[in-house]
Length: 207
Image (cartoon, rainbow, N blue to C red; front, side):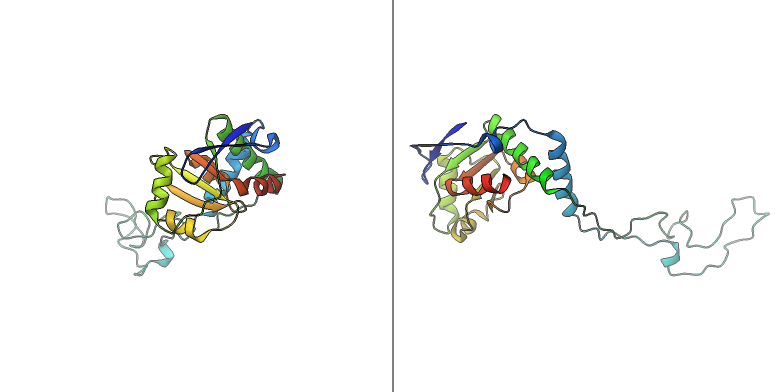
């Protein structure tokens, strides 16, 4: 697959690039994508949820009324989970949601995500950016590329502070480097914009 390369002003140049079929042209594996996205979302969870159970509630354990003869249901202490102010029955406890995946499966998921985007016209190649650290410059670039109303994932070859600073105030834009992107970010973006210098690194990492 060949894609045109756009310059920093959003204008298509005479240059083009041929994408690797091994990374951008495979048949997407939906199950690999599912597992990788599931792991990413699970690893983001803090797992600090907690509610008090009956043994953690402050109060007396005295029996509220006699067992028989009242005409009502039997009742134990006021800390019972069936009473207002009592402990939570089987409430949430702190836990770790993290789990691991095989590195080959994660590579397959990333290749599948890129291939899905390539088939659905979701990729764009741009020359390496040399912007001032100003949001208005980055917004002007998005406007010239007709991306101002889309979620954009920009993948750079290496970390560039000015580009990061120019984009960080834009809620629909995320800037990452070729060694730090993930499947969720690729699929969550309406358009994935690849810096020219990132292509070789992505193809090297995923192969």
